[in-house]
Image (cartoon, rainbow, N blue to C red):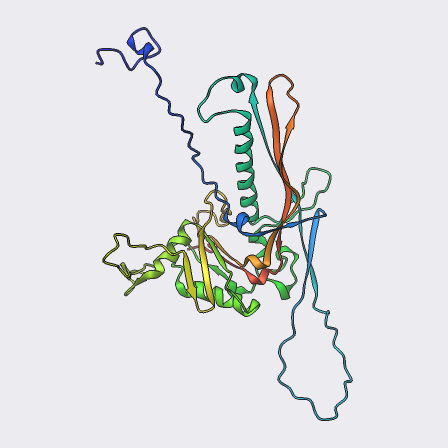
Length: 341
């Protein structure tokens, strides 16, 4: 038994006079990076439905023209044009601090300015999760359905009806890899996606792989070599170059050199990854994005509005309205786990 009763501060005894040791440090226990939102170019929107046109070139011809042949048929060079669109979605986070809380000293601190800053950080995560999602775009109907933007998971697909994208402009099937978590995602799989994207755009130098934890580990394991063990397993030997003057061996992969360019590899925010559609399948998720063919269109830039203090304390909200522009769905790729293992 403790002699001085230092453990009990609720009853009489020496413990009631013990000082609190509360450090002036506040730790946010949630990931807040937004790699996709931060990487895409920002454009100005002027309507709630953002539209853009796409076009393609006809296949190259190697046929010659006979001497003296007249032109008797003419080609409509714009017959293949299509118009794509995405709806603007509004995002909002509110905040409030009571008048009593504003007056007292607190760790952090916990004042109106800090509440406003935290709401902005939460709003950015909301946007990242939405543009990373499989959400379908929706139109405001005046009876409870709000406008919603279509996420990357909806745009980067090969099925009919994918983001209302005409077949000629959909993501090629070769740019989408579907692997259960218990099956290896291999270097050949990644190269197949990159090659598929290259056949559409002719360039892949600006690609960025945004990977969840499982996919990131798979890419780092590309450095392994040797014979594979059981089905789906990788060899346990890793090939590295070691400088005797250095004490660090780097085993992660940040840049991947493919046959068609260098791909940057970044970690997705684990709280913002899209939900896996297969029940009971933990999954593997990642997007291969070309920032040249995607952007964020802002109708209302992110900002903060303070509301009247009605006696309880300062309050307000932060909001913005924007949409995702996927200028060419075929310029991107996707790794998912939707099939049963």
